[in-house]
Image (cartoon, rainbow, N blue to C red; front, side):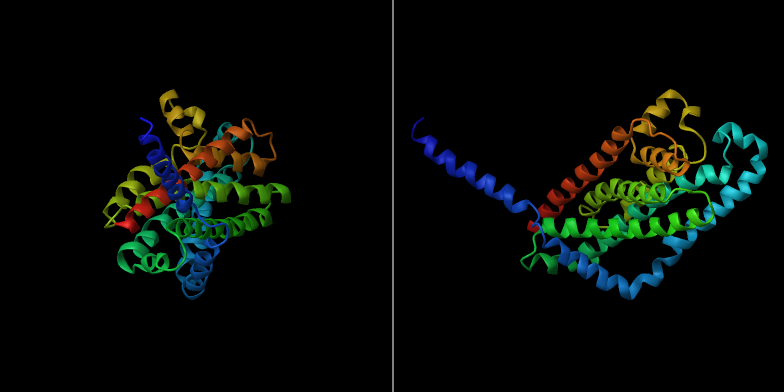
Length: 281
């Protein structure tokens, strides 16, 4: 027993060193963000419609068009607000979900399996964890930029009256986008083709828009569906965005933030571990 004890200490130390090695560098991940920004400056035109114009078309079509069909019955759903004002903050959170999820799917897989730029990056002093943190931070920046544009439109149209509420909505949308982006990044780094993305977007992302309080209150759903909805990030993002837009007291504020943060942190941690394993193969 005594002879085995000295051998166990180096083993424990090697595992500790491996865990420390897997952690991202405090600043090196910013080089990944810098690279992504340089690429985005050449390709930003391709994302203008999906990130900025499409959400406004949906807002006009559903908020004004469907709101006109709902008519006076909307007050029973919205608590007295117009239907367009009711769904606008929710559409902002939903757009953050869609943008974060799409940026975490095909672009991440492309940089691993198709153009293999991540293989080149990890050949430098940057670690796999730096790549994942930088890639996720860039996605958060794109979501925040699109959310700021959406909030500016809502502020100009009078849907959001408080500047402080508008700033809070940008933060909530960014966190909502991260809560979806980080787990999908973790999924993307394990894939060899994009066939799995169809399942995620058709059976998870798209239905969530209808079961997270975007177009009607979650309370109108059956109790089991309500419980399931509150386990997902979008319901919490919608609740926070709507409360900030209406300047109403936010019930369970810390619970909403905790759920969104947990999805983001767990997803990012999983992405770092899984990406590191793939790069070491």
